[in-house]
Image 1 (cartoon, rainbow, N blue to C red):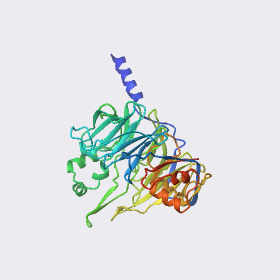
Image 2 (cartoon, helix red, strand yellow):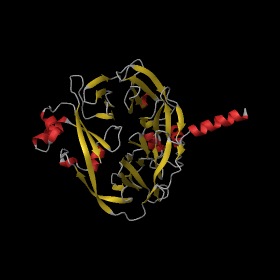
Image 3 (tube, rainbow, N blue to C red):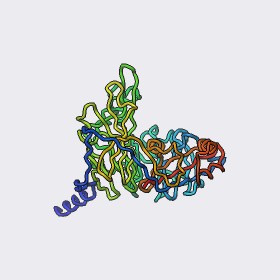
Image 4 (tube, helix red, strand yellow):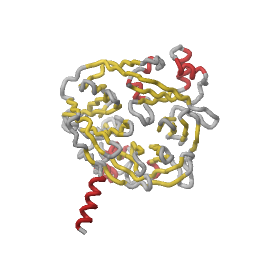
Length: 411
């Protein structure tokens, strides 16, 4: 019996997520030092355009967003009205459905997260207003099952991880951490606030079968940082959206602003430190956060926000790039784009424009995906700013047609 217990313990330990011992390559970002300016060149390897089919039943507006894209599928949804469209890689519609406010209880009120499991052809629709549930549908929209998450939890973002689990982030603290008045402002109770703050391990694996927490990632945050800040005097609040998980090929970059270390999570559940910032975010005064935006094989792009005691993390920020080739951090003087195709309109050639409209999670590294509206393309066509294939596509479109998906491959 003793040996059986020892063997079971060994299996449990080896199956849990571990942190890589390879620390010699960890980058140290020292925010206390003077950071030089540099002109950043974005090298475009290729650009591809996929016009999405327009039919009487498949019409999109500004609120329709790309939620998933791979070499085989493109999934679009409108979180507010509940539309879900599935296209093939050529932009042809495969299926469509909308189960918003279904009376039988299998529908959703508003889509807060949509996750596609391409291997099993299942779509997970998360909706906070339906009491911590996720509805699971087939690719054609057939209801399959309901996942029940732990009480008082809000997971965002959520990603498909493997055949058994979803990778998720417990995001409740974004609201509650400020104080009780903030909780009242958003309509939640003090009990919710306490429960949320006590969750010090926000990265979890969720079961695809029932929604239970299978395990927590070994990232412990003793003091979490809210991105919602309440100004009591002005009876107002400000927010600073941050990315907590960034897809990087088949791996994931874990970027909680309360952690001094950013980790890379591999498919075999190994956590490898990518960089460590100093001074600590908990010690630096005024408090300064690094908001990760994009990772490529050549650089890390982030925004630095400084805490304002009156307004919280305001809208002003400083753009920083860590250049992997010369192992240095730079303040961005300006961005320039090297685009051999010459097809990308000139006013889109800024990284801010790329990341601001970056949608979906392509299954390859170094890719940026955007949705180009038909009316904007027609306007650009008339002013002579389009070239190549994009010009040809726009010339055959109407202003009310569905958008074109732009896939940019960076070198």
